[in-house]
Length: 624
Image 1: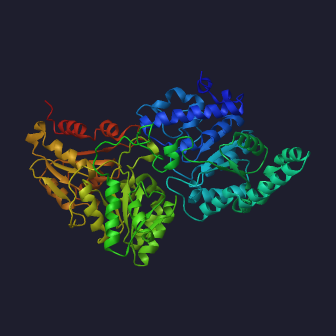
Image 2: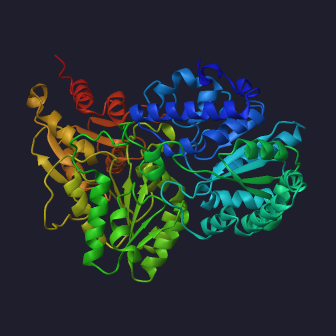
């Protein structure tokens, strides 16, 4: 019987010896590789924290003690040992386990987390609330070195230093977020993790003690008992100590003796403590150790060789965006590429590799990134940002204050826009249109395919204002790519199917499905007029008003929140001019998006070809 088969709750870890914990870790790593090889998911980060997670649950008493996993994509082992082992193969699947902690899924999940840098502020507040009611439980947050560069984390550290609540911060230092970390804080942590002065002293002391005949070995064992004191003296965490937070470390995150000893020690402090734990992403699976970035958010793969199970698919929108920006960088010396810890995910690694002097990775700091872009634009440069829609949400104030009010020419590629499969509600990209449409002077656009994306990014440089171009994570439509640029007039739609019947105004990557539906035999008599909207702001008012004044029904289709998006823009235009025609607005309703693949999500919200056709037949009363 495997050790893992005996673990149904954290209580089952309490009596395990260190060799048993090591065996359990091997079994869990094997299971993690099997799960992610089938489902896709976050592999390298989860492999790196297996030992850390087991040690935490052995020493502390969850769910009484609260564990807050910053970002949360490293919580697979936590789920396995907290009663969800039998469901782990459902992770990231419709109806299965969330890929992140979720308070509605288990009492062991203290916080819903999908975005970086959020846990410290919440943990601080939970500790304050516990002390107000004289509670005894421990509040433990596990935050990565990448997340520690985020503004929210630094703000929280400042507040923690002021309030000094009893809480434990485990800094999981693997020198990476998704891509290698950048910045001064990362350099400081690298210095601490290296522990050069401590290592040199330790080596000298050990060699001297062992060389003393007779008493040497005994003295050596005694010296190990004061190892933590020596380490702390020689490797001070000055940044944290100055903030009022006790620093301990660095600790080997794969050494159970060290982990268990230090976790028992930090339980005794009545003020905030930061325990610096050094781990290795991908630990235990060689392909993930060698290439942790590729296995961060992994597609299914072959376990034997780590090769991804790639099918013949067109180039992705992200890749087209990155290649387009690279071409623009090479054509125009003023173009600069920016991202927030996402060079691979946004496709901008193409620029980073060939023109590192024209590329800026600011780390997990979206707010700073937009302010940095504003500074570049004010100085005459032409910044182009690549950012996921879900992380763009964090910088709405900077969009308004730093870009829009000064009408600065910054182009933003909004990646992972629309419905996003696998990652659940924290990573949905359906809110960008609603969040930004009310901002004056901002351009909101969406291409119908990857070829139009390239032309749109090129054209946006010349629009000389803040431009946001949204597109999904998936592969493109497989259309030919034009070798030469062609212009896209700002605010102008594109008629794809002439017709005298209802106007079908579709946005972005739902345009091909709308065009396909319009040609269905059941709808042939409706003579649908299909238009690629291209822009939500500024809206092509002429095409909408022409249909409305002719009394033709208007149907809008968008892969975004229905409230505040394209449909709302059309409704507001008609209301302002007191025009009334039959209207159907297809989009994502105001609810938390379920966990499923993108294909399943589009079907669920009736935004795939079958759903759009069914809704049109109902709306036009053409059902047989």
